[in-house]
Amino acid sequence: MKILVPIKRVVDYNVKVRPKGDGSDVDLANVKMSMNPFCEIAVEEAVRLKEAGKATEIVVVSIGPAKAQEQIRAAMAIGADRGILVQTDENLEPLAIAKCLKAIYEKESPELVILGKQSIDGDNNQTGQMFAALAGLPQGTFASKVEVTDAGVNVTREIDGGLQTVALKLPAVVTTDLRLNEPRYASLPNIMKAKKKPMDTMSLEDLGVDATPRVKLLSVAPPPERKGGIKVASVEELVEKLKNEAKVVS
Amino acid sequence: MSVLVIAEHDNASIKGATLNTVTAAQKLDSDVVVLVAGTACGAAAEQAQKISGVSKVILADAQCYEHQLAENVAALVTELASGYSHILAPATTTGKNLLPRVGALVDSQMISDVIGVESADTFTRPIYAGNVIAKVQSSDAIKVMTVRATAFDPASAEGGSAALETADAAHDQGISSFAGEELAESDRPELTSARIVISGGRGMQNGENFNLLYSLADKLGAAVGASRAAVDAGFVPNDMQVGQTGKIVAPELYIAVGISGAIQHLAGMKDSKVIVAINKDEEAPIFQVADYGLVADLFEAVPELDKLLG
Image 1: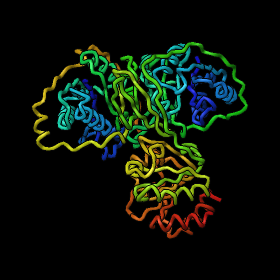
Image 2: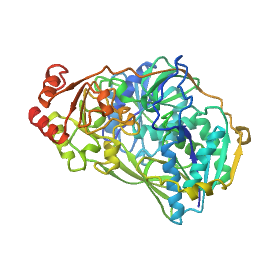
Image 3: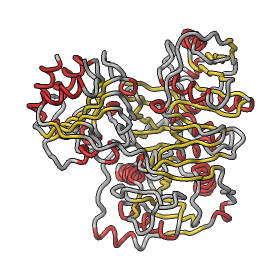
Image 4: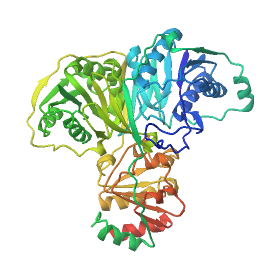
């Protein structure tokens, strides 16, 4: 079974992002970039399926700037076999990404596509579902467990009330939640080995995708600031404040 | 044009987040239609008819919609879509699972987690874990969006008298099926609609110690949540997670116990009206957003709080 894992280069999760002074966009000058955490979980899951003998090849694809090669190499160091960079300096919307993935899917014909449930920059949580819809595939979103069976794949999903399991026919799309696995750290020998793994580069034109934006970013602003609070000295004082000042308990 | 709201329900009754989504819909157009897709979900549709400000309810009752499988429901919504200017669902796990699929099928770039409606095509939404609020304008013919329930007041569940229409088509795509579920059972209020939320973090040390919070919660009529650290450590189940990738809450009172306050956690609770933090580390970032901070050992402070509020 071949697994396709789409990944994204994003601002590192430790960076506190702020708007630019003119409010036109966020300020990303000189901030640390990393693989989106949910994408790392997707790569790890694919590698575990390969180690368990369920998968034969793992292809990683990223759609972004030339520097996204760093994240593709990082995925290869975890254990992906091959990489594809769809190089663009445009900031593509999830629908356009989904269209690119559909084109890659048709070229590669994987049986399983595993990707992160959301990226921590746009927080959209759309790409996997959109791609599944365009390719006519079933989806197991927010996965905390993935089990490949003879009939297809069973995906346990983290939902608001608890857990739900769906049975999907292959090919299928899985989006990862936090507790699916804990990604390994790549070892130095594997990082060195990753540098020699094959990587193709292509363009949006090669895929025939129209990525014209549909949604215009008008402005960005910081969220309303919470005014500084106070420290209370004791539980008694806390209860007194909650009852008489904030009036939220009686 | 009209606005279509996809109801969140369990076939027997409408879930609260639907009411907030109806309020968001009313800011877009006065003609609000609610779709109830499920199996033997007539009772839920009847409830939807009573929601104030809803003009019509579409009932799609078929076996293939029983568990709201996105593959099947998206096909149904896509069939209905052409008559609407906007398609909305609450930003719950059900809405987040379904709506992007609808967006792709109607070729619309969906807008996730809307917290403000500026006009029929301009919306605000949080990005980067809520550190930035983006104002965006959609040029798509059908605007598809999930709505963050805590950002809109609920519409009244009573007083409406919407017409009822049925949609007959059963769009069973035959590619996915429901295989089981484990739902948490609790007599406490739902996290996302509770007036008071008490959350525990890594400082709770283990799952058993959450009993301290449950006891206090039951006295206050509160829901109990958790930070990602507490869920990852296996103290409590995933459905209790509050944060960027968990549940978003905005209660009148949020009590954070043993939670350091990572930005990912703050993203899920910082719109709460009053925030209390109890943590023994006075440098913990949670104190920067707390109205009332108490530097104390939670294992002493929580039982005392329990006693004083009991």
